[in-house]
Image (cartoon, rainbow, N blue to C red; front, side, top):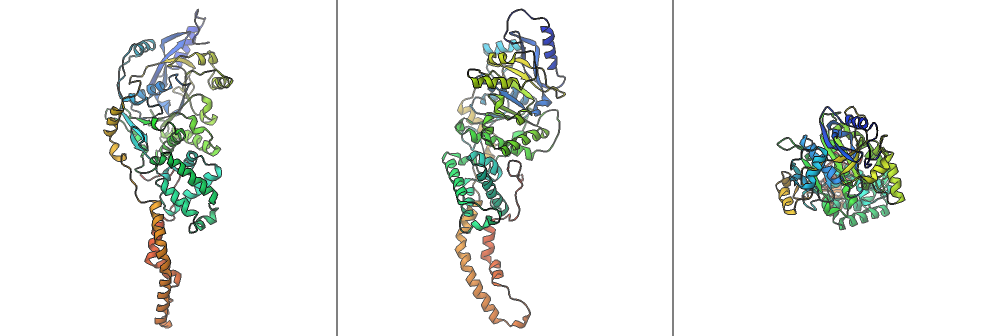
Amino acid sequence: MSAGEAGDKPPGADAEVAAIAAGYAFTGQALDLGALLWDGRCRADAQVRIPLPMLNRHGLVAGATGTGKTKTLQLIAEQLSAQGVPVFLADVKGDLSGIARPGQAGERVRGRAGEVGQEWTATGFPAEFLALGGLGHGVPVRATITSFGPVLLSKVLGLNQTQEQSLGLIFHYADTKGLELIDLKDLRAVVAFLTSDEGRPELKDIGGLSTATAGVILRSLTAFEAQGMADFFGEPEFDTADLLRTAPDGRGVVSVLELPAVQDKPLLFSTFLMWLLADLFHDLPEIGDADKPKLVFFFDEAHLLFDDASKAFLDSITQTVRLIRSKGVGVFFVTQTPKDVPSDVLGQLGNRVQHALRAFTPEDQKALRATVQTFPKSSYDLEELLTGLGTGEAVVTVLSEDGAPTPVAATRLRAPESLMGPVDAAELDAAVRASALYGRYAQAVDRESAYERLQRTRAAAPEAAAEAPRAAKAAKAAKAAKSGKSGKEEPSLVEQVVGSGMFKSLARSVGTQLGREITRSLFGTARRRR
């Protein structure tokens, strides 16, 4: 039955409404989404909610452009913060910064609140504003090349499988030799060294690095840097533990990653979000089921992460999403249609808020039918309903307190209590400078790493070469001056050269962590020591 139908109330309608309402009448803490839509009317007596403990079972917020997905994110984030749960929001369009300021009570807000039975109060929430590499208004978020890893970097650079494997070999060499890859110039230096006459033998026993593949990697890095991406990689590296903070009043901090400045680099920011999630995954302890999540992570423009992804990459995403639940982290993917998310991932998203879909083309019709098939059976005509929903309305099904899906409910959503729109740039900048994180991350640091060490190695090479003849001459003189009766064997030429101060200095410059490889996660991201 369509929620938009008018006319006489069919027999048994009250029983169906009561059954749906009972499916959302949870006994524990829950977030209020809105009120049930039935036969064209908003039923304030039938509230639609999500149990707080089920927020770490992941979810999907989907719908066509302009249907209200962003306001749904804001509504859920506000209530999570109020319950003491930190939230991470990717703000692609730049209109979520208003969550830090109280909303404005207008006629539309009052009307919506009255329809859904909401006691609306203008409220601002504790917020932290972040920006990738400092591009935009926010505390800079950076990652080192070493921590980012070869798998995620390959996706950002658009490398094929063979090139990705070669990049993994390069990371393996750098890890074992203690050559820290902090920024792009470090990686370029290592690639150039491994294709030089001096460095080529280093990888000979494990497959080597072809000149052609190295050329592709170097050209991709150059193009990447020319697009202004160099600022994203470097130090100080962002500590994802800073996403787990609460405010002094006990409310969860809402970390808003401002992304408008990199809207034309969608693949970069989607992959960077995956780095944040992967980093959280291998840093957090197992906690199992908890009364509330430690963090809820909203992954906007999720389809970009899955576009052109290899099977191995998709498998890693699936495993990360599956396992991170037991560490208390909930992940909500935000996209236009459920078909944007692979079925193995979609099957783990128990909480669904589906806004309106368009059906203007045969492809749209196909997507609509596929979306309907992902919902539990209901008395709604979902194909008709999903094309007729208004802005701020959605079809909802979530996991109940015992883990079973709730009845499908057409829902008129509540109005956010914070400002539904961006704050001005000056106010945003002032908030960033006042942040406790600003002093830790604002200023970039360029310490000694692979680039500097390899440069010093190259400069020291002529002196090391000159040391060998001198050592040989000294050994010959020492042998002639001493009697062979001493019974003590003279050191060989090789031993003298290896023992020389110049050689030891050269060895130290190649790496201070020789033989100690970095442990890497499913995505090849490095496990850091805090």
